[in-house]
Figure 1 (tube, helix red, strand yellow):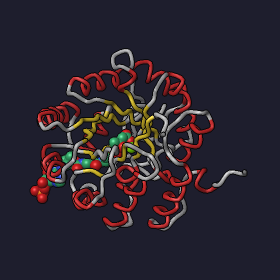
Figure 2: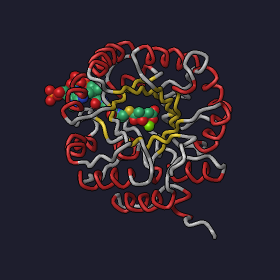
Figure 3: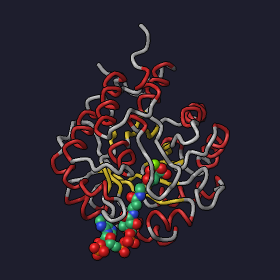
Length: 300
Ligand code: HMG
Ligand code: MG
């Protein structure tokens, strides 16, 4: 019998991991990636995004991927949706989980989704109303929670207020994105303290990019605060086209290795993840970015 997970991992490689890649990947490769990820024990796999193909060409195949994907029982396949046009496309593809995504920074909001924060909430309100009426589960992302490439410092209170607005729209979970990976353990923990003054900790997830090599340390810190949902990306793939200097997400295999070592159950098979990290990195013409995929297997 499988043990219940202590920590839930939200795998974001097929979306965040690939969205910034220049090399065009065929839909079949993305389908193989997602199907193999589902065989590791992961239960949340972000499968793509319904955004403008002019803005993010790599995600133009998301509809095709979802139409042809064999969905594993017990696995959820959320997609990013910025507006009603994205929601309609997601619904046509049979999506049951979506994520809306905004930014704690005005400048990043304009660069990433071409509107101000208040304008983004007009879109989110429309999307969330229809999604809820259709029984589609709604997750919310906040970018730039620990710093913005254009504005610099972002106060935890700004993030807390943004998170409350997303909860009011019906988001079951708020993922806090350190988009450019500038956070350190103390700033990350202080952010969790601030946000959880208004949002129950069970509804808060973390999404660390590893730009400055702080992601695992940040995860360790927020685990002490009680966080139990972690976004990560196999092979350490990742980056946002509108956040220069935002390379990989924290690698799923690095997170699982750390949690395994701490006796924290994720339900995810590390050896299979490492194989997938090799597979997708080969498809992209490089080696995995993670430490664990390059070092594996550990000595017996
Ligand atoms: P816009 O240009 O302002 O949109 O883009 P518009 O409404 O004026 O429409 C312009 C054209 O885009 C029209 O086509 C629309 O049909 C089309 P045309 O008539 O010119 O041929 N369009 C769409 N096409 C497909 N799907 C749609 C859609 N909407 C409009 N949903 C828009 C606004 C939001 C669409 C654009 O800015 C966009 O697509 N942005 C997405 C950027 C993105 O995906 N960024 C990466 C994800 S966020 C992230 O990575 C951070 C995160 O990981 C957390 C973290 O790390 O912090 C989540
Ligand atoms: Mg990201």
